[in-house]
Structure formats: C-alpha cells, structure tokens
Length: 155
Figure 1: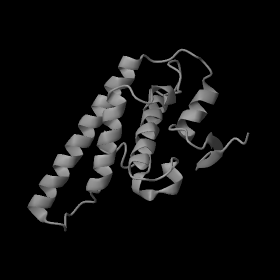
Figure 2: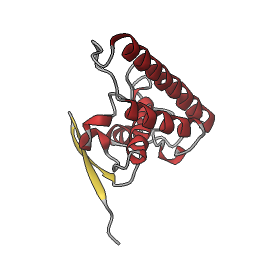
Figure 3: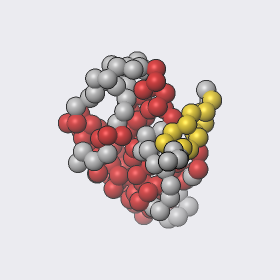
Figure 4: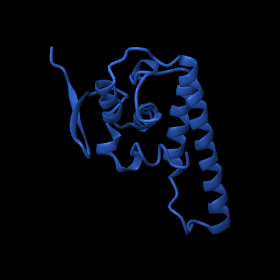
C-alpha cells in the first residue's frame, strides 16, 4: 500500500505531510519539536473555532459595508466573498468540534500559542479549500487561501 504525501515548504525547508491531512507544515514541525502527548481539550478547540468564526463574520460585514460605501473600487484589498463563505463554514465546523483529530499540536509547547493557532488555521484553510473543490495543502497550491492570509487576517 502506497503512502501519499504532499510536500510543504516554508523558510526552514520542506516537510512531507500526509496528502489528505488537514494540518500542515507548521503543526507538523511543532509536533516534531514538542513530542509531549498531552492534548488540549475539545472544548478549548471548539472555543477557538467560535472566535475565528466571529472574525470571519466581522470581515464579511466589513466587506459588505465597504463595497456599499465605495463600490467595487474599495481602497483596501478585500477577501473575496467566496473565500469568506468557505472560511465561515470551516470555522463553524471547528466550533462544533469537527476535525479535532487533526489538531495535533501538544498542549505543552513553546511559541506562546503560535503553533496551536497555526494548527487551527491550517485545519480551517484546508477545509475551506475542500469546500471550494480544491485539494489540501493550500499554503503552497492556492494563493486564494494561504494559511497566514486570509485565514488569520484581522485576528
């Protein structure tokens, strides 16, 4: 049986990630660097999904208000409505506790929460891609849904 992997790249190099994994390079590096097995609670994971959903709802309202005031020539770069909708759906699913098995960063880790936040961003980004008919691994395949932006924008 063949294992299928995707290769993700960052400033430190490359990491092989299982092809259909919802986590990405940041979460995999954190798991490798902090091998503790203690996990965050599912309630905490769901709460972060709720906060991210609130951010995407706010971005949607800001986008609609900006377009209403300025028309399509808004003087700032806005996330597309399709991307916002996909992010809202994915964050809503996280808020309901879905994909918890993809939350692989251990509770005891360094980085002041960066790794856990990136893990959830990667889950949301990859689910948003799946919801729009694309494959996982968005940071490197699709500029429309990069993990750092727009998934974490305004958070």
